[in-house]
Image (cartoon, rainbow, N blue to C red; front, side):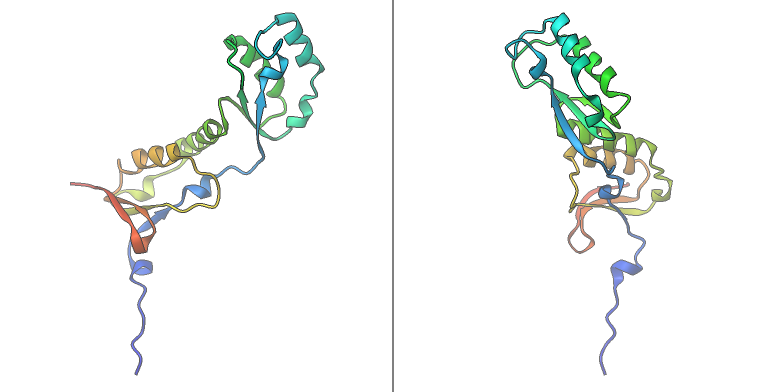
Amino acid sequence: MEEEIINRVAQSKLITFDLEELYQEGERVTLDISQWLYEGLILREKEFRAQLEEMDWTTYQDKYVALTCSSDAIVPGWAFMLVTSKLAPFAKKVVQGNLETLETTLYQEQLTQYNFSDFKDKPIIIKGCANKPVPQNAYLMAITKIQQLAKSVMYGEACSAVPLFKKK
């Protein structure tokens, strides 16, 4: 007679929080403003504005955009604001920084809106493996929110979780 295999993980009150489920679908692109600087280094306002007017901003329709400047130019803050004003009618989101900054911002928005009330006094595991890009900052934001409510917080998979926090 064979003994029935019991999945104790499935029967436990353990809640898995998967950050990947908060991933916002959509294409991510970097837009380097150095292309509009004189010799890639100097912002000449009149020329800068003229080049922005010639740009086809519809190519950024429904995209997430990370604005950057790859050269060592000193770029005034208004320049990024001006580019953003051109992108805003088309892009889903615009941030100044790299793609990781963009991803962190998107996760921050999602985590701010997320209802964590079901986590009160329960053991939580923050899933570690992801197929989508989850920045490290998203994990830091998640544990900050979760440990305020949870009985305990672990990281990884149920079979090999690393304990991070336990309410005293």
